[in-house]
Amino acid sequence: MSALRFYYDLFSQPCRAVYVFLKINGIPFESQILDLFAGEHRTPEFTQVNPRKKVPAISDGDFNLSESVAIVRYITDKYRDKIPDHWYPRDLRARARVDEYLEYQHLGTRLHYAALSMDEMMGSRTGRKTDPKQKERLITNMQKVTHIVQKTFLGDQQFLCGNEISLADLFAAHEILQLVGVGRDPVADQPKLAAWLERVSHKLNPYFAESLEKMYSLSGQQVPQKYKSKY
Image 1 (cartoon, rainbow, N blue to C red):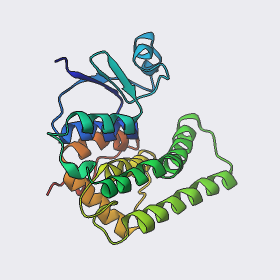
Image 2 (image 1 turned 90 degrees about the vertical axis):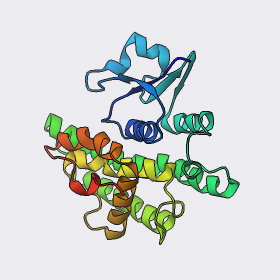
Image 3 (image 1 turned 45 degrees about the vertical axis):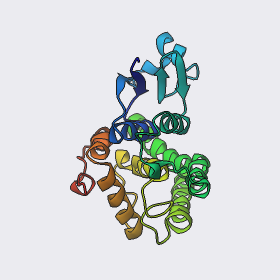
């Protein structure tokens, strides 16, 4: 059987989520690293894999697939005997809770954290200053989403969908920590969410810390020790 080919750049939060999922579950793959800043995702070769020219993407033999959530669902189903059930449970209601977050994130966590991150990153690269009112809206929207994740998903649980880690935590953690690339600590004043992030990192290390190195380096930082530990 030919190895799974995984196309990614760890600058991308969905790529980091898929990368960590593959590594933590011991799924063998052939790395195909693309430099997004250099436009390597726009080459004719990669367009054959994903005509929409986005990462992450995989090639499994003659089968190509893009979109991070679709990829992890595919991998979970293909390697059911190898991947622990808590990631994407067989139980109908438990799985529905994970899906609930995965569907929410597209226009929730991902949209608003990425919007603020990209605004500040492009500003630092081009010298362009955002209109103060627009900046305020971006920050307010990010804060609203943070409250929703903490209040309606995490609550008093250990993880977003219960007391075991799932795909929901994997994706949420990477979206939220995207802001470290512009020097922001997104959970500095959110102790409950900060404690959750540490629990997630402990479950996913050493690969979680490894996946974050590129983002922290963008703002001249190193991955903090609290995200390097492992239970």
